[in-house]
Length: 227
Ligand SMILES: Nc1nc2c(ncn2[C@@H]2O[C@H](COP(=O)(O)OP(=O)(O)OP(=O)(O)O)[C@@H](O)[C@H]2O)c(=O)[nH]1
Ligand SMILES: [Mg+2]
Image (cartoon, rainbow, N blue to C red):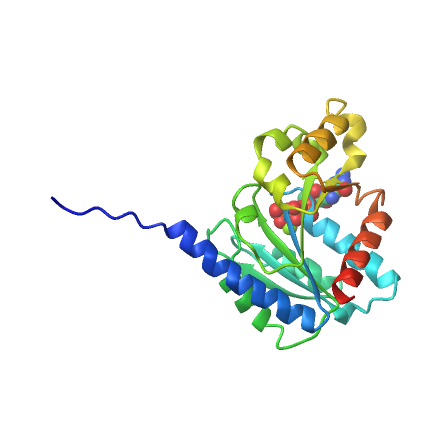
């Protein structure tokens, strides 16, 4: 009878990815670069929030050339160009259909910065609430966005993402008056069930709500890395 073998590809891939991610995280910490991975579904407001954060960090004294962004998308240069127009260096990482970012991609994208040193490096991950949560990208901090138009019930439908992050950033809160069925209390309650330490920010890039608090939190996370 033929022998049957089961090859656990996923576990091997994830283990190899985790080792690379740990080495990458340590290398960036050596350079005092704080690296944050921004995850969310398509259109949740990742690029808009990044632009708002860049502006806030600049106002607080961080030079534009001390920030860098890796923009991951299946295709196109659209988001990288927006970041570049804001005066910040960016690398567009086109995954050509792959729905998450993994370490080989991060390392390759990072090499295009040619050894530049940053205080803050951000990754705008692929717009997807499922796969990105499984892959360590070498970031010191992972956050997710959930926009008000998407609905609060995503916390019940995509639990691994909510469990994987340090912070949940609720975006487009200027739409709250138009979405009376958005149950913020239920969202916070269930997010805390999935992830007891999760920090929740309620923001709007349109009105500026919550952006100061969020920027202060990112600054604190960077200082904690340097200490
Ligand atoms: N009203 C309102 N609209 C917002 C806000 N943030 C982003 N938007 C709008 O939402 C749309 C999507 O925003 P993006 O920042 O491109 O979203 P994204 O998550 O980067 O999208 P992908 O990269 O395509 O996945 C744009 O039309 C933004 O202007 C907000 O706080 N309030
Ligand atoms: Mg974007």
